[in-house]
Length: 230
Image (cartoon, rainbow, N blue to C red; front, side, top):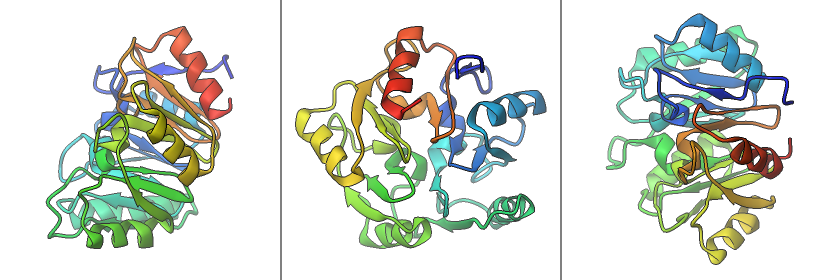
């Protein structure tokens, strides 16, 4: 897999996970990203891209989280944005459910607080039961509450695929054991962008490929490949 480009920027930032999010088949990223860059990311992740904003903002990775069943987005996402995601997925021959967090939910950054693959989701411990129900129903997953490295923003503290988990380098032994238990996958610790421990802020991945922030070192790329089974 080393023949492919593996490090990227979005909006000239190496924190690509703030701006984009990927599943096994789809990549959501800001509507203004140049087509050339879209094609490069599609190639690295082996997905089809949907250019969109969420709540009229480009920080799509902070405001959306998903898996092969669909996406959970901020409660402030516009209906037109949701329909665009659904219609674009349909044009690619994919069914894609898109649901907002409940209007009553105080937490709005869905991508920051949901860590999910196709079977399980770990979420911010403060999410309401109604929000957990939306996540469970939309993504068709088992949902658990927890922290990683003491952080409630679990969607930024780790990345999970259907093959492995790469977590914040300061995650405790008990937290790593819990991740192994709920996801039933191997779990490793690491960093991105030259030592930055918030993995989800600078790594997009699925079982077919990955894209890391442009500041990620060769050693860090090696750990990503080892943890996620490349």
